[in-house]
Length: 455
Image (cartoon, rainbow, N blue to C red; front, side):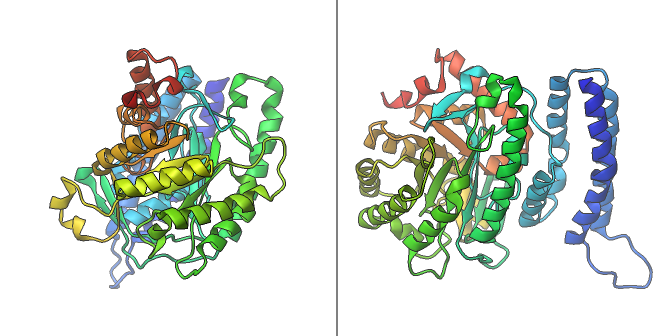
């Protein structure tokens, strides 16, 4: 029965979606015809090649699905996405990113059917995470693809940064690949459709997810209990300020008032290097005043039994010991719910500094950031005495990396750049590796491993 259903789904995917994809993609890349003699644009050839490859995969999958169970077919489908990654590499980085978000928003990505290893489940802020691997803010800036991204198997997805007023961000090009180093430099500058557009989108998705969850809750299985306000999967909302705003606190407060009803947790982003003056908000007095105002705005709203969403602050990796001590003091004094460590770096550690692209201004993410962000994470865990949940972010590209972040003090882990390069197949691979790491060292849960290297 499952095989027949998957087969029908695959047929629908081929005929109604896949065939039309390269036509849309070619619009981004093709040049106008300059001569009377018709020539096939180079990008159209790529599009046809992509179409042929995808149809071939679909046909092969159709034959394969009839002989295997749902979980096995799911694994095959995720593995097949690796064949598409090279085609995205041929596109401009921002165009590829836009297409990826569009595909996820339309459901043109596989959906994870394999259960997470039980050892990865954990409770944070009273919310049940099926696994600690999340997608960092910056990928789905405008909350277009929450359902599709959660369906890939992430334990949580963070959207944003969202600004009150729509803004275009910095001039293009503003996204640069350093593929050999597994890194990206970006100077996007909080390009956002604004709070109103994101609230409308989140509201529609929230209602749809709650309806689907309630309709399937009759089975009352344990898996349906994992998740947040709208169902399985945790949703974080990352808040930013507009570039021209003179009152940063007012921007974050507006974000809380408009978006917190849909969020399982909220993030104050004061650490992007691409908005002038933003990182100054990490100073002790500035951060204390800001957090107080945002907490007050959240707490004055009416909440049900579940209470208000947790409030986190995302910090930079380019901070001195004194800066970290100040942030830890504010976090403890104001009982902040968590910290995300860290955002991108303005430094250019080895081997990035040898790449000509390193001269581009902006924040560096990816593998070269791992050691720096992990050291900052470890210091902050010690400074906060393990009393505040930390999310480790920066350079995570494997289950072993995630495990190192957890041992350094992270309760949850996020990735972005590795996902951009590795695609959907990376997620299941990371979860499997992380479970193996925990079992190898004798840990029975994520919580047991948190901060193990600091004890």
